Image 1: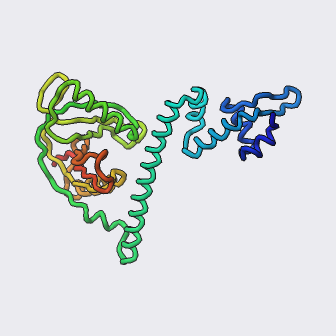
Image 2 (image 1 turned 180 degrees about the vertical axis):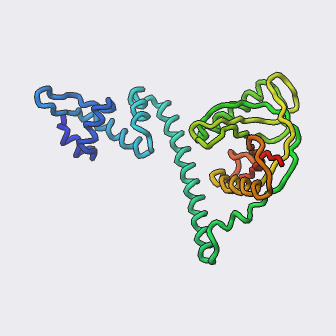
Length: 266
């Protein structure tokens, strides 16, 4: 057996962390002296603490690590969770790459003596009449990070109902404010068939703008649309919506094309 001090030295994990892992039942010592409270570990537990360290490096939460350990290190579960983490890290790397590009562009703008937010003036807003649509949709309060999961659910139901899409998917934002963890969103697809599962969206006058780039920067288009609407003397008259002209699953983030619409009235 190894004392907590020796176990700490070999594994290069602090005694404080080991005590905490004991408290939360992540890694309990094989023996604890009742009188002194000293903790002792089997040498076999070195493999477990190394696994914990490895999964932490992969950005696993302690709760996620506990699930892996409680499963007896089930290989299928471990493969699935590591695959998911790889996807998450890849997405973060892509986001940071886009962020670096934005920083470079902003620095170039400043070096030219221009204002950082001048790019807003390049966003074009138009007025258009959007025709009536017959849509198949699901409306839920959701975390925006789970959008992809719910969109897959929509298309699965679309296939089950054997409906024929007539246009690209769209999202209608019904929330009165912005709460990314609890957003009232309606994911929809225009379809040819009219059934009890579909509904008609009436035609409406809209201010709209086409955006090309990563979704994280859509707030610029929203801001320009709201300013344009006020400047032109219109009033917002319904829930804004986005129509996706490209598939984000197969399109580079900086090449996404989204049409953003704000229903308006005089």
